Length: 349
Image (cartoon, rainbow, N blue to C red; front, side, top):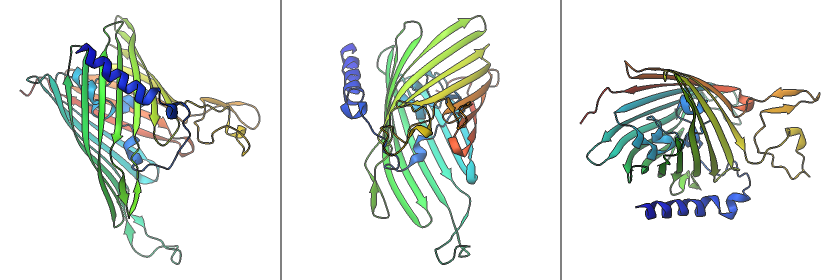
């Protein structure tokens, strides 16, 4: 079994980490569809900068790393609501059930992004035709996680995908495959996952690829002293439609009931400022801002693009978790995320 684990790890690394295209990738923004599949579904994870691949110890692992579900021993459900600018709503629902007979975990999840009614306009009727339309995205999935050894597990999700805009619809499928390894040394965990792997979809006879992402992450409990604990995590992302990204996150907890979180998403290629880019520059115009930059007057200012904060409250007696996070969206400001989790007191079977 140890040999099998080593083979899986080697395949992951050789295919994605060491592949030349991942080392010299260029931004390909706008080349993949169904971008809603990239939206973080957990306020807790977003509060930690979504560096959650190697944490994945609640029901949101359905999205972040299905192999991490092996850490759950009781049925659990999660619900997330996000209010985006322009009255765009995002809803995520997921639930898991451990299956002791197979030493695994079974789960289901649904993601929906939708708008309110929008006024239809045309070049000749710029103030409206009198008709309205809507746009929406949907992903529904079934997930299974299996323990292979006392330290290593694998998991997979199979998704049905649908995109709707006015009278046009596109349907397809994708899969997520993840691994989770508990080293047993200083509470360090390692996780890897491939998300949204599937065939190209077609919208109005125009094919487009899915936003495939490879993630590799590690986490550790850096502090456990009395009622206090500090969880640190980080991960590397290689998407097929953008440059590589690094996520870093931290969660400080008191009595395992109250939590404060901070996270940052950092592109692999970092510019000093947007002002440093011009047509003759070698810098990529699509990379993310750093945390601080200089303005026109030379003064340092805080940049919230990619920055996230969060808080959480756990009520063990009721089996309820309530989490909130704010994530910066650059020029769009930010988005508020609310997640409610519920854990049953015992097993269903």
